[in-house]
Image (cartoon, rainbow, N blue to C red; front, top):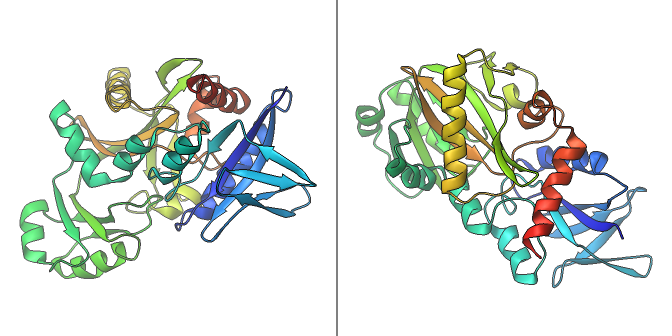
Length: 327
């Protein structure tokens, strides 16, 4: 019997449209010989299944079922494509674990940790992972631009601590720009992280569990048209994404090994994509995405293609891994 797969998409953050694009790609490529996929929109205030004729059917949040044409659908697995809250910060994972439905991304603790840039960097530092110099701010704290510049220097990046797709990110070049940049970050989160500028080649490394084995995908070099890899660069074609990256084989293996080590140390599952900058010849960790984009414009599908993995096989392997963990 075919497994009923709920493809969770949307979310409560500024990334919800990107998530819906990712979810629709999964819906398109899941093997219909093995699975019966359903598009589940999880939005602020309403959760519902969208059928082929665009009719919405509400999800019963008490048990994550849906009633369609007098039939109650119980899902065997959730394919989690939500970027941001609640699918990438642990809330959805915890809910699904409580009601006993497996899902394709990492567990709730790993999700919450990796979504918090400040905490993740703190956890990784004892493992020797290099990162930018950081300064942390809470929304209700007084901002002292002089102290910030003394610690991280200029230029620097002011970021929302818990946000993705470069929402709430500003490159700051003068001390006077810090307070406006912090206010921009605080439109996305109540915490901000300020990072020193790292000059060097930026790369992205996908790590997945595929057919039961943890593997790094080919490294992608990111060359934004603007000053950094912002929303336009990620989703509006304002960048070059070169796979494999134009770095030495030695550097490719080095950054892949670090990405795999992070994945294993954190006891990750499913897909991840970690960003690094080769600063002064060494890879410096920037962030990890545990629900990376998988739309046509996204990096991880490009890497999988270079590795000879079709989207059908990539997505099917993720579902089978989730189902196996629930046996």
